[in-house]
Image (cartoon, rainbow, N blue to C red; front, side, top):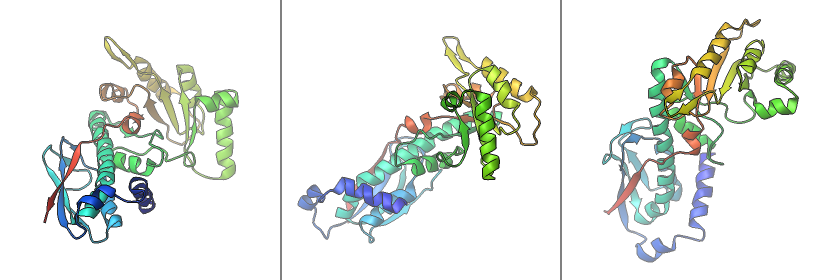
Length: 293
């Protein structure tokens, strides 16, 4: 799948050919290019970046001096690619785009994980990924130490506010989800989004629900981060009797940033999901410098 993507992305970039490289670089000229981190961060996507050059020219070789998940400092070399200079120039931008985006996601994830970890909460991604890049975006979250939420619409029953509205209420939506799972005889998790403490209590009492999404229960004010409603919601879940042996988990979402995540984690939630990890990623600044052989 990744090879198919890379070929398509190269086609998007190349069109009928790299006219600048063809005009200025001798076909037989060889070179070595070095990846250099221009800021501190977590590296991710090295294998994919290396694969770009292989698909441009099988004789171009990549050799990295670090591994995905390593923390690097500004100015540090990540490794080299060597081969025909023209092939390196063709693959340069695509390889950097992938490496910079994945490293940016991994770096942001690592920072959030480190802030939440002392409280036992795990950081989740969401489906708020760039179209066509979900596999790379979610891979980068894993490299950064996060946990993948559902990949798509097929691998979890996640009953959100619009499902509840379309079903005619939270109880009806949960009952239908439970019936569908039983009829299909599968073990997909059922998660239900809640926005009020009353909804939290109703969802917590349903025997088929595996996880409760506590949405937008965090307030950011001039006085700081207010997680009182979220803390109360966790208490409601913990104190609600359940006629089920299935463990019940909690997930917080909404207003999740590096400035709020520690306070959110302190409430006792099991998971914290952040769309910003992938939809608002800041690419890690990485360059590729070529030297002729």
